[in-house]
Image (cartoon, rainbow, N blue to C red; front, side, top):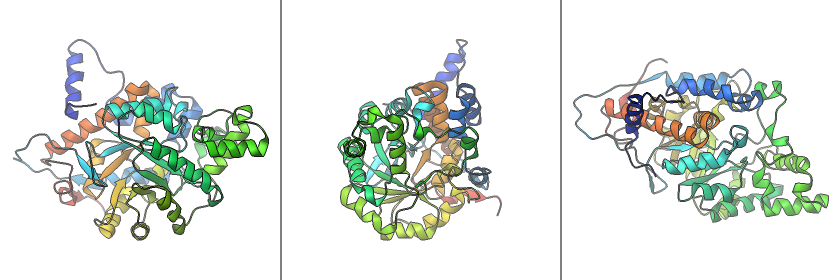
Length: 401
């Protein structure tokens, strides 16, 4: 487990520099993308980089951060800031988590195992995607005693038995929080994937579909339909699992009752973009939401997630926990999202780029870099902690309307 203050990572780098050793992975977050592109196939890079349509939503995510600036206070005598945060009654060392990203073996052979191991070592919460290349149980083993949550791509009502099976497996494997993605009941219109004719979920292997291939209910039903096991026809099995978790139509608010019945921990709805939907989540008895537009990957022409965060935070106040996702690239980005009402921030593409560049070490590098950057950002701005009492809208100024 990480024990040193995150900013001390730079001390290690400068000490290596005295020996003539320079880092192999950039410390400039904007260069992680280009470094990853150098080592990935066109298919794999296009998948992680790609966004819906003309990338307008993705552009709006990044532009939203530039509308806010941190205003520092001086002569604030304090130790380095605490980065601890509390969600669902539990204290977390850091206000960031690994966002649920699927098909990780297309980026590095170690895939989810590498990312989950790195998250555990850095004391960062890992969120497993339903589109994982590795089973619920094997990722839990790699994450060992780390903090882990489970993300659900929610099968349609006709497959409630599979939904329940996934929840039971996740609970038995120590995943504490259920994160339900609402905006991906079908894959968005992504030109980069279309130009490459690349859909990782349809290939005759386990990448992106291993949760289905290892699920007893899906395996039994597949055998009943085809009189053969999944391993005997991987292509058909992959396509059927993809249709199961991406059914094409959305659930309703009433359907949340099934999840409440079969999951006794916190439930978080990912993909909320309006104050009205946030309030509906409260009314439905949900414990948290993720303000997210899926990093611009699902719908083009959308508003930046950060633009909606203050309104949603104001509407729900302390009625549920708010998590933020979409567009995070730096410590200052994390600080701004926390100041505008989030209790935790999800890191998506940056850690995937780190995974592509250097496997487990690459993921660790990205996490340590972002946390070190965040810690010094707060410290140099005279903000003594990441808690809402000291990191809130009062430390920001809006630059443009």
